[in-house]
Length: 475
Image (cartoon, rainbow, N blue to C red; front, side, top):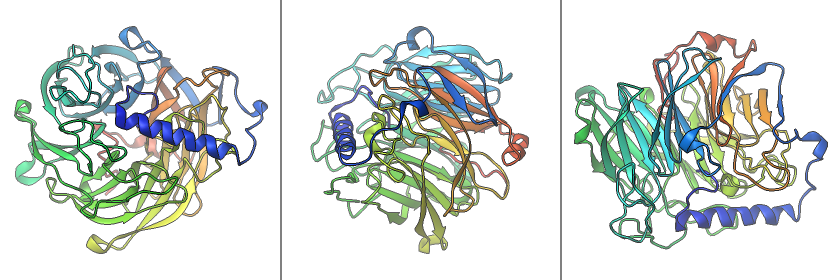
């Protein structure tokens, strides 16, 4: 979920309400951090073990403040970066000197992105006049409006080709790839997540209640045959009904992370954190669900550790558009929550262990909250790199679920000291020895961490990485 996006009605409600909650808390809790503790506008600070190697600013049609950079995916020597106006392909064969290979103009927030072989998938979560890359905005109440998944052929990274579009109910806020197995090995399933806020339908194909996902099956050798094959309701009991002052009801999922080798999926679903069995990709089954009505406002994303006996869930308090990294909000809200998976199979349960949040205070003009991250593959350890919007990038260890701690960080100062400008790292992922961050306003960052605790990961090489389709690094 991103701040200040081209919101439809259902998303404006979340940002406004959550931001109001943040403001309300700020009137009763501690004072804001001292200015001396915050880097100056456009300044940079980091731990001694982290170095910014390169930055490529946003360019051309993607250069404006409104063209927000979003998620990342990787294949071989290329990084694929989403943007609200389309996507960019970077050559990262020399990480300290990345170059732009191509930019594809194809507006439609939020352009969440993933890769499977020579196919690129792009989420459209704003109501458009049609499914083309020349579409314009259209009211969500118009029954002819389009949103969903677009598919591109990237066999030539310098010249991507638009192949197919699949319309989905309520659009595609995020999506997750599930590789087919056995007789389905030449297919990939696309789990499409979107959601409603409140109890109001916003169109003929987006009606309350909406606690389902859409599953698209894509024949990888014939992507034009992609089609919806299922629309399962993930929470048959309706999920979290909400009703409190902090936690939102479950009317859809924000993000799903699958671990194909374990046939497991972690769901961050608004008011619920959940564990699923995906041994049958077309029929995910709920194993366990947890709620946190005290400290979690919006369950945003999830990551397994490599052994798949822990899950890190994030809370996107404030919708990503508020300053929540400060003493006013405190250490347990807008944070990560670490859960152990206790037991196996249908009897597995999620057990809360601790919260983790960056300790560096941010300015009132900086949107900061827990966001997208990935494992840094070190055998026997559980280490993540994570984006915190304008809170920067944090590398942290949760090997001991009850005592997580930070290893290193990189952070820029606020974009402005007088107004809130949406910015910072949307996604920070570790890929083949380096950290890549898609900064909403500053462009692509390439960083390196040199630390004895993370150095073993430099020897792990992948051919492809979609963080929401989590690889098994060691088994």
